[in-house]
Length: 418
Ligand code: PGA
Ligand code: ZN
Image (cartoon, rainbow, N blue to C red; front, side):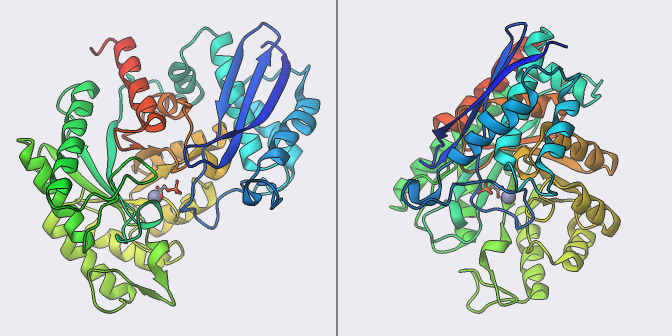
């Protein structure tokens, strides 16, 4: 393997106008990789540490000069001139260099930026497209395919305008044809939602992930708009196009109760599970993400026991792409699907290890962007490489989302599917 010539980090902006980190890795043979790190706002408490400057004289304390400095000084000094056999070797070196369990020292953002940039450089050096290189890293010998896109059409919770409690209202075209045709269906529904919302005078704006953030009265209203739009596009809801939700329950869980607009009084976990059961029998959700708060393990198991046969119960804040939490969830049968976000754990190889754990438990895999994104398409190649069932990259709108769906179109072409 060629030696690392130099690693370089700098502060750039993400899609929400917050600073984030860009990293360039240059190898001795001239191969290079450039990556940028996404950032969440509805984060799980157990995520690895995103290092921000905390200097209130710049970007309200959100600067990333410290993380960039860690790349340029600490990490570059430690690895320039060295050769690593694979991403795994480099990642293990970086984990030791950091020395903390949650990457608090160098920052998971700094470490992930280096891990992704190095992986891209190695792929180039090996003359492989990134998705094939990731497939190799993850021992995925299956035929490669494009995951089903999970389009986030309506944005509420922390990503919206404040009047919907649930964070994401998803539509997923069923896998009948190519990814290109699933994208076309998604776009037609997206444009139809816009038309229907305008008709109701409910358009507010779009939210952080490009979905609409409308003025509606209840969460149920948002689901109704999805059903109406799917039907108006001459598709059958739940047959041609399935529905999903990222409830992101942490964001409306206070003092042991769930408070949403659809009910006049706060609900305890039992009542909220009853509510979700009714909702599910009405809308036949394919994916139900973070339906409960992140530490209510017992009720996650109850809910999965009740609904898991027909609906994939997906852990995001519950699992935070963390192997120990995944082990616990497998043992307790807490869920049967997982959101995979590399920056929740902070290296490419640890992310791959969690995909393998989840796969071995027969869970559905949903590789996901963050609400604060860049135009990096690493995650699209990653999703194809690891053989993810689903990919959640936001609405089919806004550059930082569309660039990833467009990358799928290119990969689909390369794979010879279209
Ligand atoms: P985040 O939200 O990127 O703001 O954490 C995404 C999600 O909860 O799935
Ligand atoms: Zn989520």
